[in-house]
Image (tube, rainbow, N blue to C red; front, side, top):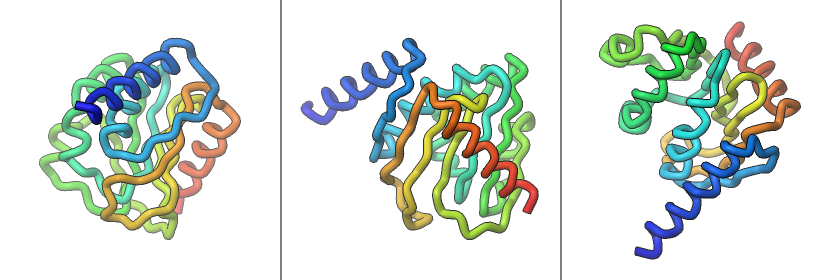
Length: 156
């Protein structure tokens, strides 16, 4: 019960940060935290969603299908860079997502939206589900830096 209350408090905190367009770091350390952040961050996208990840874990992303679909319907460009091959069934589920396999030693996975919103993971083993990360709904300086990094990774 206590765990559920903590998750609901975290959800309310994230919802408030999203609604108020807050420029404050939001710590997160569990897969559930990451999903909550994605649930609020993805609908904020107006132009692009760029994600760099080790692999596109269907078990994580399938709960966010409707968020990706909604973003796509608004004309948002969605591009995901991954270190591992994307299964064909995933490409069929998300035909509008541009997937690209990249070869990089970078282990800090991240998402950046519209050069304003981001979630950035600290260094961790590739197979780790619960990782320390920081997020923000209104930090254009760091978001632009991450988007530049995304572009560099994409062209390598």
